[in-house]
Picture: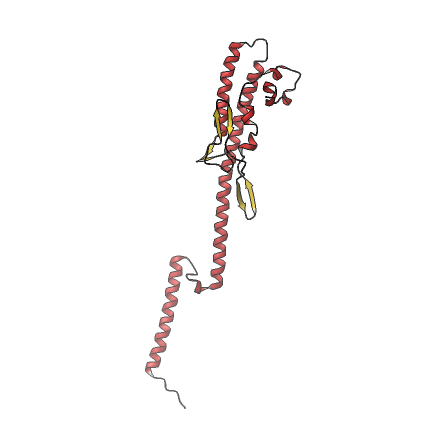
Length: 218
C-alpha cells in the first residue's frame, strides 16, 4: 500500500516547523533581552529550583551584611560613650582628691560640688545616648529613655535584655549593653548625701575605695 503525500500535508508540516522555529527564536530573543536563561519554571524545573535556592541564600547573606553593619555602628557608639564616661570619671576623681587636703575650704568645695553636679548631668546624658531613635543602654526597651534623674538620684527604667544580631546561619552576637549591667548600683550610688571621709583616709588604696563607702554605706 503506497502512502500518498498530499500538498496539504506538506504545507502543514512546513507550517508546523516554521511555528516551532519561530517559538525558539522568540524565546532566544527574550533570553537575550532579559539576560535570563530561565524565563518560566517550565523552561528548566531543575534549574529553577537551584535558582530559587541561590536567591534565598543571597537574600540571607545581604541581611547578615546589614546586621553586621548595624551592629558595628552600635558598637562604635558604645565605645565612644565609654571613652567619654572614662573622662568624666577621671575628672571626678581629680576633683575628689583635690579637695582631700588642708587647702580645701567651704568655698572650693561648693565650686567642686557644682562641677560634680554638672558631671553627673553629662554622665546621665551619655547613658541616654541614642542611635537613630533607639537608646543604646535600655535593654529591650530601646524606644524609652532608660535613665531618669530626680532630686533623689538617678533611676534606671530599662531592663536587662540583650539584643543579638545574626551574622551568619546559627551565629549571633550581642550588640548592646543593658544599663542594669553597665551601672547596677546607679540608683543608690549617685543619689542622696555623701561623706568624703573614707577618701580622706589615705591608708585606703585608691583602687579599693568604693562608692558605697560614701555616707558610711547608707
